[in-house]
Image (cartoon, rainbow, N blue to C red; front, side, top):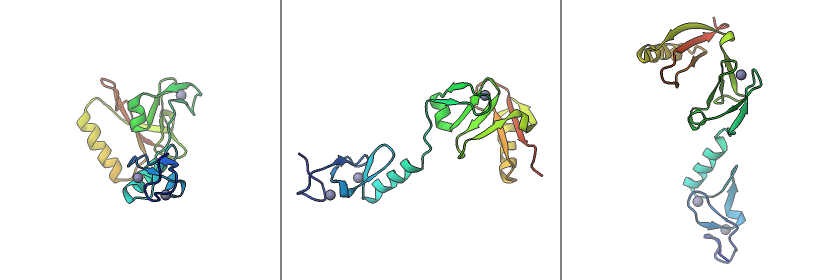
Amino acid sequence: MKSCTNHPGKTAYSICNNCKEDFCEDCLDEGKDFYYCKKEECQQKLKEELSSVYIPKYVVCHNCGSELELSEEEKEIRKVHCPECESLIDFNFTPPKILNKENYTEILSTLNQGDIALIKSILDDGNIDYFILGENFFGCETIIGTGKNFS
Ligand SMILES: [Zn+2]
Ligand SMILES: [Zn+2]
Ligand SMILES: [Zn+2]
């Protein structure tokens, strides 16, 4: 039996997912999937684990109900494009934000990455609600739209 790094007499309960040392129950904090010890850098990892939004491999489009399989890239950017109804589901928001073409006004449709970058910076500066469709699909026409309700 291994014993706790901090308490030599106590039986280790689990390892810290960050430093991989053995610890007793008192020395561990539980994250979503793993345990972390009380060390500052390990607590930092715990915080990251707790703040990350869990994204399953399959999601149901909140707009049309079709089942979508997420690619690694989509998990990375936390956005899923539904080919059925052309919605973009953005998991960076809780609850996930549904960006549907119908709710937005198309302001630009372009293949020019320079234009896209420029417009994004303008919209970001103005705190304007917008979405970009097709940004990550090579050779795909990119459409930038803004929310109809913004004034
Ligand atoms: Zn640790
Ligand atoms: Zn301990
Ligand atoms: Zn859909």
